[in-house]
Image 1: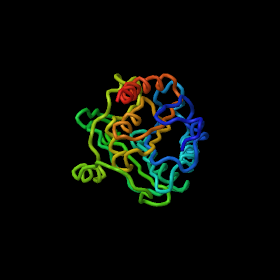
Image 2 (image 1 turned 90 degrees about the horizontal axis):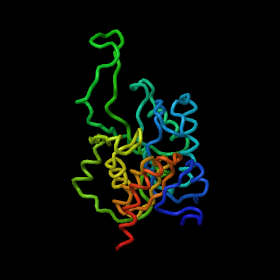
Image 3 (image 1 turned 90 degrees about the vertical axis):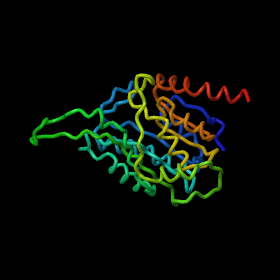
Image 4 (image 1 turned 135 degrees about the horizontal axis):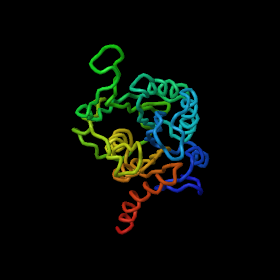
Length: 254
């Protein structure tokens, strides 16, 4: 059970390390998150332009804490893109970091964002002198704690077609319209939805330490899971709460 200072189905407007500090060990079933990519995006309360080694060290502190708070057999899913058009191998450095913490890699999924139609020429256009390679894909890195098999039974309504489609390690779906959400790097609800349905049973406790506009919480609610989120930005926290509150209030009517 949660400590009396933390509640389920709630987003905490604070640094995720503060949330994790108050959380009991071996509590979480699943973490699904997309941390800042360290590519100089304009977050209003976070420096997205750290030195690469400092960035990995910062993530290591967070995911070490998440490891302690995760049940044996629990999973951790990280959506990440490489920096500078693929020239900074962020995803491989994160895999190594997670292995050093103790996480076991389960799989790496390629998220095809279906953006090749909007391809823009970069670098030395029509010349081999110095071409650049924008990446219309990102990585979904999946890890488990101590064992690949869940150590508890649960309910799922995962269909055969859905399981076959999602077990192929290339997922194709588009991105969210950022202007509508008011967040510079929102991922689509389809991403956490697939992750939760593939890697957790219903009623699992899902955590997102960088919950942003609340997408992971929405996906968890839709799959009848519980959630906890952390978001350091008050502005993004308000956006997330405005998206989630109607769902939770609707539930109270029944």
